Image (cartoon, rainbow, N blue to C red; front, side, top):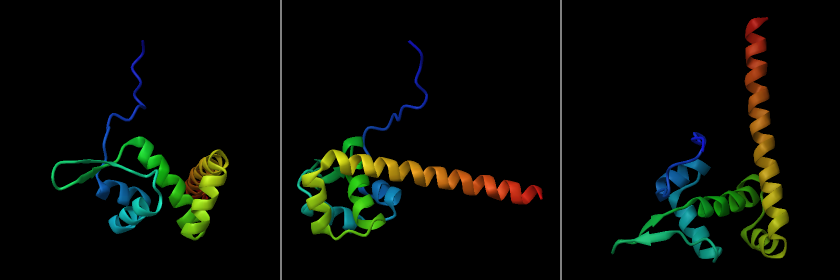
Length: 116
């Protein structure tokens, strides 16, 4: 069996790391946890330190896409997720891929401009 070098070896992420991933405040993540009942990171210890797993980050990615990228209000985002979860997931994936392609094309354009 070949070694998978692309696999993410980190199992848990802190709230600070997740907030930085999405460019939001930690308080925004805590608020989303209250508003979206399926977003429940693992907590440990008496201080209830949040530990986000990949499944939690995927949930946040979907919420972030709907609320911050596409501009939906929280009530509308909840409605979309509850009524058509699979469709919302696919749209978020497509948007993420398009953003990555755009960034790659912009980097390529910069390199071409530099050569001219």
